[in-house]
Image 1: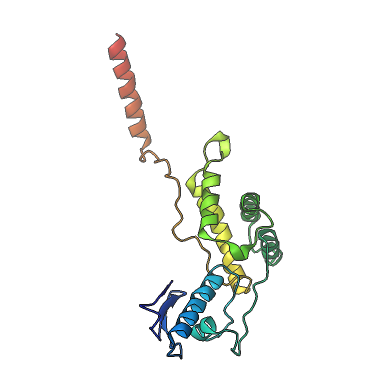
Image 2 (image 1 turned 135 degrees about the vertical axis):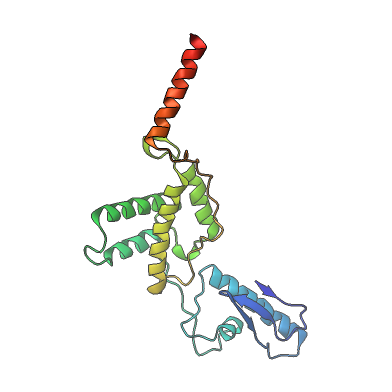
Amino acid sequence: MVTTRSIWQLSPRFRFGGRKFKRSLHTKNAANAEGRRCRLEENIRLVESGRLEVPMGADIPLFLLSDGKIDCKPIAVQNRTISTLFTEYLAGLPQESLEADTLYTVRIHMEHIERILGSRFSVAGLTEAHLQNYVLHRSRESGRHGKRLSPTTIKKELGTFSSVWSWAVRAVYVARPFPNKGLRFPKAREKPPFQTWEEIEGKIRSAAFSICSGSC
């Protein structure tokens, strides 16, 4: 997250939001430098957890290093639940923007997400670990015809969640990208290679001939 060579380093380098930054701590005192470095790390953790939001257009290093003496005050993230987020998303859809079948599928996906994560789960605290737990939970459930749910279906459900999340980012309801990087899915069953009708008939005749030969 934040790297420093020692508490004497007065211009720490750190990475935030995929970008690298370097900013002077404006002190020559070792204790003060260490205190500001710790505040920097803590503020990054607060932003990553969704408890603190970087104001639009803010000087990121100044914001993260500040102890409140900045022109742009931190914006507290509204505590939206998954249920509220999904409800607002569906309510904001333009009429007939989605086909009836697509909308039906989206609602089914949302029901599974609410059921497993909890309708009162705060989206501000969503992490990769929560999504990985969702994948694990769903992979143990049955799908159609009593068969184990396929990884493709789980990915489609999270794809719906990701679309809602992107909308929430644009609406400034959440401040972070959807935390789905690095998710692991169960291995999908390999489908048999494509065969023409002639090839299938040939294999059936060959199998029938082998059975006949063995029993005759």
